[in-house]
Image 1 (cartoon, one colour):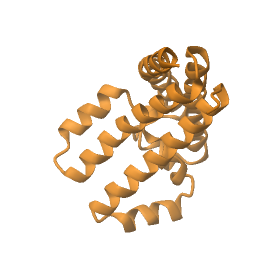
Image 2 (cartoon, rainbow, N blue to C red):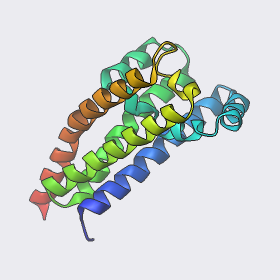
Image 3 (spheres, rainbow, N blue to C red):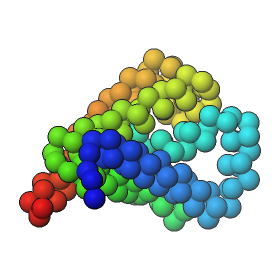
Image 4 (cartoon, helix red, strand yellow):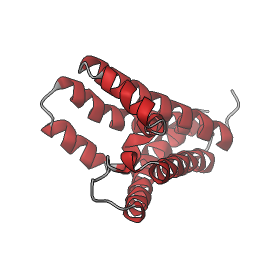
Length: 171
């Protein structure tokens, strides 16, 4: 199978967005809040894009902290899903890149793309910005997304690097 930076980027982005959306749907279905989700999307169409990028504005330790603090199994799945989607997308980028630079480049493009999507969603509708904080301004939301995005790119980039290293050694 051919491997390239574009494949690492494209496949990791698709996996990341799809898994986030899937975990969001599973959580709201299990919690019997699916009607609320549909109402949110119908009132704020940009919320559907937020659903696919929500872990981007959380540090990994925040996802675990919220997982530990949550008492309902439905929302434990939600918070754990944010972490799992990052890990699986990083693994996919590592496999699809072929070498270190292409894999890491594809991964960084994936994180940059999700950061840009999240910033656009925040700029379009303040409703989505309220998921960061009710008192956050757009400028503060952008700074939060940039900082957490860079940290996530570097932390999960280690996984990409390890997978690219292991698959490169086996070729």
